[in-house]
Amino acid sequence: MAEALSDSDFSDNEQTPLDVEFNTAANHLRKITNKLDNNQLLELYGLFKQGIDGKCNTPKPGWLDSRGRRKWEAWKALGDMPKEIAKQNYIDFVQKYDPNWLELSGCRETGVTEAWVAVSSLQYSPEPELIHDELSILEAAREDCEVRIAKLLASNPELKHERDDNGLTALHWAADRDSTKALEALIERGCLIDAVDDCGQTALHYAASCGHIRSTQILIKAGATLKKDDDDCTPLDVAADDDIKMILEGAM
Image (cartoon, rainbow, N blue to C red; front, side, top):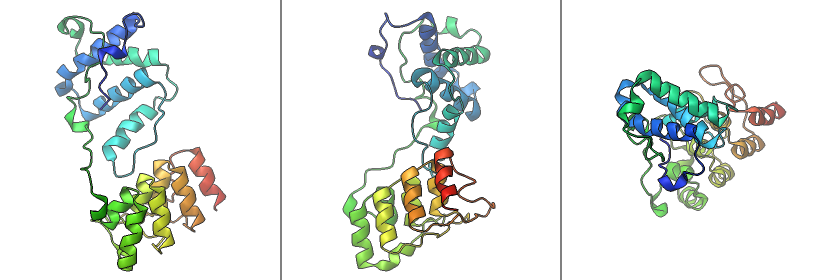
């Protein structure tokens, strides 16, 4: 889940006793993952990221990357928690589920080495490499390939109505991935701005819930409405942050 770090990322001179214990706990986690459920692993992931990087500073993953969103939310939920407190909470968590962890670890390790690799249930599986000239309209939207979109729609305008198994159009995919060039290309070529998926959600729902400011602005400018989905939620109801809410409120 977290990026693997090498020993060179931590010099002995820079490490405090807390850092050393935290790194040892992170390495030991691989030995006790079978004792933890996904919610506990997510909590640990959030503490790990907070301890290493501080406050969450990355965009929210797309709506379709459910595992990535859960990991991001676990980190984001910690807010301004100081790194030192996050590290201590992480250590305390490991201590709770394996009281003898420090003795069993053999020694205090100085670097975090693939601390999360063993957590296969929460690993992200990257999409395969794609050849742009072979992309479908949905794939081109996802990959932000506006040239491919233009070519496909020029040869077959009906592709703008194509949907995947969950009812997502190319516009949904572009909004979910913040593929702004693709989004504009699709809108310019007549894709239905308020098309809904199988849950009644529009592309604006996706852009708003993922915190994609530019995609939200593009959709609003193109006339997207605050339509309710099957759960009676508008894009404003599912907006990820205050910036998105301000944009949507300004369109009301």
